Image (cartoon, rainbow, N blue to C red):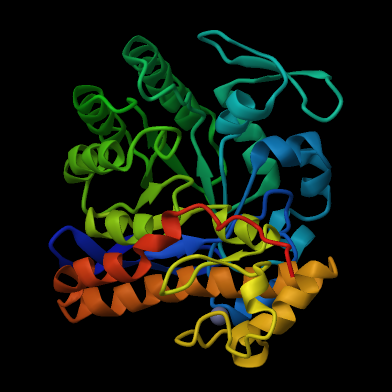
Length: 377
Ligand SMILES: [Zn+2]
């Protein structure tokens, strides 16, 4: 069921189709994040209009609230949140390590306290798979341990544990209508990354995720890790770079052979009044936009840019109107989804590699932090 067909290749960049029970996924693809079974401020209709094809949701959050068994009782995640297209859930590992109040890791699993009410819970590979089977996404993740990328001893230990947990995740997984992806770890050490890529590639996973990046390492370290990992992965399986998604990360990742991306950044920035643009990141709260009749980005054809001025968006932000978050989320998601669609076209005509420098030049400023808020007018 989970065939990946490669349609075009230019250098290491790929265009392909991954077949899932909820439709074909054209790759490369950027997935918006719906942490709590909701992409914040947007309806499924908005997402369809934006051309979103894959939505990610978080196992840790849904397990704690409303509970994976309740989601299963309501017909699964697709039906519960009314998203008819492909979905992906993470294993919950990353959230347990970063969000839970306290956690204790051993070789069998992780015991943690909920960030909501302090109650004690335990995730093991078997438990993570059982939760993800209840949630019912098309693509699910093996349980893994994400290390501090610069701590070599810990990265080695976490990688070895991740490998054992990958085998246990495979054994525990029974639903044939879900593609279970293995996860490559190894911090920023090229030898560990290579060892992990080879080991995970040797297991019968229909797709492979690259974890433990964009967690505090430098951009160079991320690129070097990808340069080691993707050449060791099989051509006929999709590669998913977890939690990575600034415009320049997408360009650099696709150029290094990544097919699937997700990130909270576009919707999180939107709620902090910031917008991606082809001329650099804008903070729409800035007083300079008070009488600005231009759209956020004159080269963007999203609903927000076709319809509203910067002056109106700034007014909504100042008046604390919720519509601001919706309109900026529409724009930011459109920017990333359209960038990836454009790159897909470039790869198919063999013109992506030559455009990488100009694309990076155009989108590079979006990595900067939002400009300081000025409220002096
Ligand atoms: Zn726009």
